[in-house]
Length: 401
Image (cartoon, rainbow, N blue to C red; front, side, top):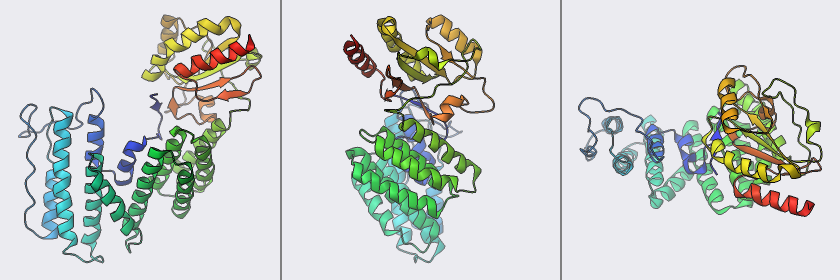
């Protein structure tokens, strides 16, 4: 199921490495992989044009370490507009391969204490990362091994980056296999990294992505809750205001993950301007739907919810929509045109971002997010989208009948 995410956002495990190294080219390849995506860069005069093929990456020349780094910078900055995703990926693979050659050549010429060593080591990590992202499994494995060899580097910056990459590599294995015990170990490692450097935005961002990844992992709800519980205090101890706000959002997410088996507090103002009365839901099966008109997956899910509403409303099924829209008129138009029959909660945004207090209270970072509540007022599940919603309702009302 697709989600649209707020910022600070969760980035799926397939691009976790991008956060750790931050290479712009990686982001462009990831973006091109999306249907209908356009290249981020526009062609400059003299650049290759669509249909003419990607420019050829020249072979690595002889030179000093400084000259080799200048050469790599030059080929990385070459702008062109690819005619296909395959063309872009082929070009970036060639750039990464030549960059790796340059890094190895420099590392063979300099000592670990040399400042040039750190730059070459980072270039090697970036190049191996890029090749790994482009499907070279050998390069991905080599990157993990090389990163592990640098975690005790005398360079604090290099050691820190290496530790992050090792953690990311381990996380990808855990997420791919659904290894819950391994995930618990990662929570401990990540917590130690946060406590050691509570003011570092990159470390905090990786923690947020990791916790979100666990939340998406099958059977990962408990370890995700453990991550939010452990990471939150570490983030809250930061002197960086933005990082502290991440810790506050973690408290809300933990509150949401703790809902199953417990009541959910629903407060807000209806789109009509009247206060919402949760008592009106007493004895009903309720779907609380956090959504927005600008969210494609939310709109795509709407026919399914309407179908289930028509099928079971008379038997005691209710929906409460919590809109994260900022434009009241657009929301009112959508509700009218789509003939949405259930109550919609809406608050006029104050500032940027997702401002609905109920979304903040429950740490909503991706929509659609739904909560299914039973007749007794206790939450049944946080996983009731698509076919699962119909299956859950069929079971509930069959039992009730």
